[in-house]
Image (cartoon, rainbow, N blue to C red; front, side, top):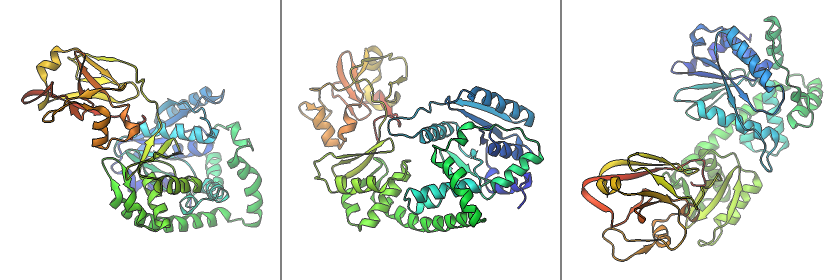
Length: 446
């Protein structure tokens, strides 16, 4: 097949009719430059195209590359955007993984409904990906390589060059006298992908010249098999899944055989946005958590999350920044919103029951966190109740309890997040305010 604007347009026709924006991951390298050049030659798409350069801040040339991208976009008459990210690797994280994760998070934030994100990965990239997964002992999902299209954030991620070879891309760039950037890190053999690309694959292709095509075909076979297994596991997972708590029912999970349990856990992790677990992590979840005593609290750490058991529930908790539990925040009662550092947003709305509006407007509102010993009297219940007892009754998991915001009015505990209102402040059949807590999805709360 010939690499032309018409070819690219054909690849995108199933997706671009309803697209509002078409973001193009643009590094300035030959692959993304060729993709952007091709797209700029499709009149039907040109007004929607936005080239996005992710500035990792890891190389001295990064500023110059951003300028190059801006000039290229001007020449091609398409929009351009620069996004700065923190790509420093965390403990136990490789530099490649840190940069990739930072990129993906940045792209997720800019996509709105029906937006498309295009990457310029090609068939040789697919070959490298599948071989790397093979050497790492991946299963069917890993050996499926990169899909042409996946749902991504609020939009879709598409790789329209995935059936095109590196040689075709290089020929197109030369024929159109394109000027691209050569990233020196692509020659560094200490990175697995570069070592594979420069040292191993050339030797394999001497013996098997069509290696990229045959491996791509194998990847598709694996993807087809994975799709069948995934559909079955997903159906089983949905029967065990609590959509409100985002957790799995452990007793029901254990009724399945071990292989099915593993498949269900993988589908659950994938659904919640976590990467596929290693065999070691999966074994730890099944052995240390599923088979633990019901009152135990084992934890398995995986991909920036921790997997917990609470009662008969399996939870995935993002490990983010916890709020300062000693802070005291003052909420101006004339304002409807209050940002909670590292803990989301508190909001009020008018309701027929809750805290009386006149009490709210006239009081001094403070937000605190549990320090221990707090008690509350609830409407239609006698006596005072400790917060610990209320949390246990409501099935609030231990890791969630400390970050529940406590709302004080004139120094008295009036409400706990959007869950309880003190009997002293509760009213009904009059103008009241109702609290809404929009949780921070990146915080230490599932």
